[in-house]
Image (tube, rainbow, N blue to C red; front, side):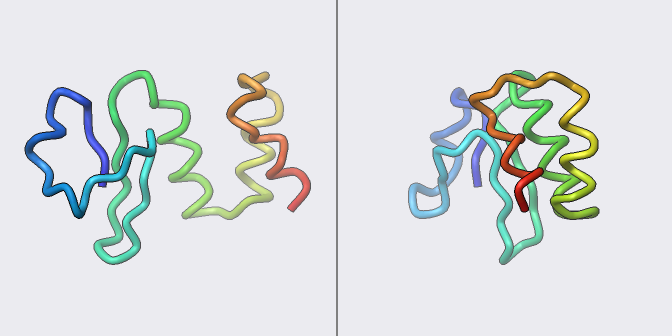
Length: 76
């Protein structure tokens, strides 16, 4: 699980993940660190609900930051 950095102390260290967006398969929970991760959060939900092909069709025309590596979804 992840959260806004200001709330990190409220999550047990063994459960905390540094990733900006996390999908916890054990609890079927998607969390993110805050408003700045909104695009990544939305893309994670699309990936989980619709798969990589659909996620790429959404990401490609958005001209996202290349460091997010959504272009790799098109290779899948």
